[in-house]
Image (cartoon, rainbow, N blue to C red):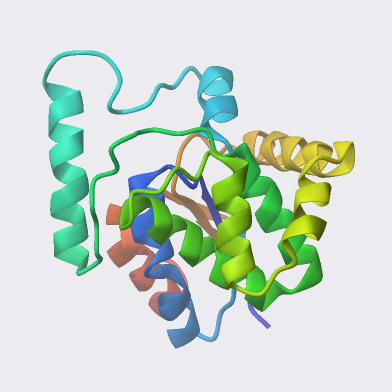
Amino acid sequence: MSEPIEFYFDFSSPYGYLMGEKIDALAERFQRRVKWRPILLGVIFPAVGGRPPVEGGGPKPRYTVRDFTRSARFLGVPYNPPSRFPLPTQNAARAYYWLHDQDCALARRYVHAVFRAFFVDDRDISAPETVLAIAADLGVDRATLAAALATPELKARLKAENDAALARGVFGSPYVVVDGEPFFGADRLPQIEKWLAEGGF
């Protein structure tokens, strides 16, 4: 069986959201599965000397904000620019890893629900209450998840995932690895498709 596609993303990344709306269907066409790996750009950027693309002055941040909306239209993905951006996403990411250990399919539904809560419904996904409410809407026991989010073990799990991502060479979101080949950005979807179809190029 072919190796799974690894998909690194931050829940506050618009391009991560766009990739997240497309990557599973693309992988399924080529009999692949996807390993979703939430990371924290607030950890990644300082470690690699990066910065949020909308930070600072000049034309680039203005262009980037425009490109978020245009890219969503191009891909046919609903997008409502969030009023608070970017947001810290450690609670959302920790909840994902806890859910993944319980039920992988449920964790995948949760990812989409969090992304859409932020990039469509403009909800504050940095707030633990929002994360818990999203999970509860999917049938997760709110109190159990709340207790898990407070544990040092789950905090250490997310730290380990960030450390592993850095060791892998991840420097932003979305970052996709197919058979050892890295692709950065939602605009790399056509290249990923060609790579999967041809076994490299």
